[in-house]
Length: 414
Ligand code: NIG
Image: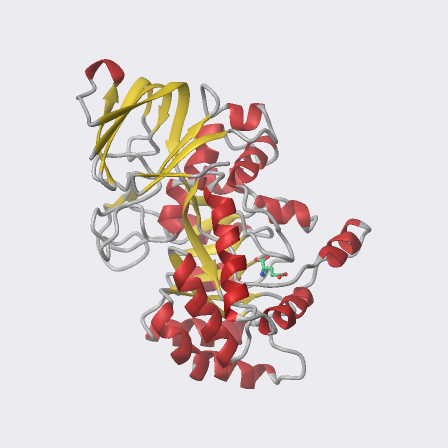
């Protein structure tokens, strides 16, 4: 079955050449994109969709969410808006509510959040454990996450539960808890921050998870400068997320991790940063979280200017960022972080895919590349109810999703 989408005013491919096509068309065949180009040259297909002069983008790739939770933290949010500052301690409130919720309800809640994201154009999504914080509940969260999300990250190292010795808990995270979640996860993460895990503990978690064959990411430099970025680069993590407080050395380290990376491929040689086959560490900015916690926005402009690969993600969670709106993140990145619309959309599509190792290859673990529109890539498409992507920032807050295809299948958007 093939579908021709034609009469596209602006086709923002986010491909290796950053192409933006006008008066364009795309053909979907099964789950993949089989053709794109000028509408005048489009081949015939089994069915045709008239885009009506709208803009077509890759579906959003949300590379940082925490969707496996129950409960509500409105009171904490209200206190923050009244002047309290955010601290990691609120994680314990969600952990209590999550532990006392049944598998059925936890799954139903997570599925509802994934559906909410999909209806707004998100077609590929990562989520984390981290509100279980004991062996049984982390394994349960990982299992449920693996049924609702495209990528699952183990975040047993989210908070040391009250009354638990931090070193003993780190042992648990690196040992029995890791073994219990391992069948369900591809990634591991650590909240390396004041009030969560210190440098030594974070290092232990990253080493154990790397030895277990997991890809790595780090929550780092959210509440102050610290070792998060440095550790992420040292361990070859796929991303370091938050990155609000960065030293010049942190920015240099992130940029250095991408030296030799051009148009989606390694050109360097040797075995240092930039070596052939080596990936760098994506800096993932979470602007909705920055606003909701009243932290300074991550320095996205400076990171891009330094040559760092950037992702934008929602960080949907009940504590610091209770939104799944990638459009809101893109809007904020343009209006407040001084990214161009093209850069912000790239960070929310290709950048997220890069942070998840899914930006290239048409048969990676049986999956197709996501986050860009190119022949052979997964047909994850987002049609805006606007003639150009600029409207995402020009008309802030207006729901602009008109249609969404995920792996070639039209999704419900209302
Ligand atoms: O990414 N920073 C750590 N974890 C989450 C917040 C978790 C919470 O407060 O519930 C975040 O912002």
